[in-house]
Image 1 (cartoon, one colour):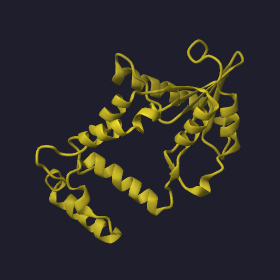
Image 2 (image 1 turned 180 degrees about the vertical axis):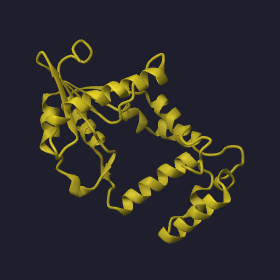
Image 3 (image 1 turned 180 degrees about the horizontal axis):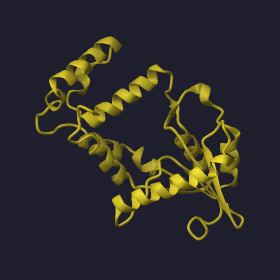
Length: 212
């Protein structure tokens, strides 16, 4: 940690490392992170997903987060607020301000719909599509509204829909601390660019649409 992330940092979101060799380095970074957390596991608190790596008076906090929570999930465990108070810089999964912008949302939407006349029905095997029809009929979800979307986007839409049915529709951990950090004037960072995130999302499930 020394010389890489000086002073105190709080990292939230998915651990994705980007470099000139993204596939190789991302895999290596995830392995390093895994073993760090493995050896730190005896130090963890059982009621929160927050880890700390310290060396020579410097600390790196790593927080496992979720983007959507229910009202009952607040207040967050006190360990998160203590880490936030100590952190000089917060590193998020991506640039939250940019991905929340209208321009980025429009760009994402354009990338997630078929522009060549295809439809969701054509992208899925008949058996898979029948299962989707049955799900929509059971839950009341309007299937016609997602016919132009690619399977990756449909998967995300239905996930958010199900979370909403479970009462999880409030601000998640990332947005909670992002808004707090902006208000408090803390330094912000990101693990991946919005473009990288969009490329990942738009390619999600390609060639494996039915499994997705």
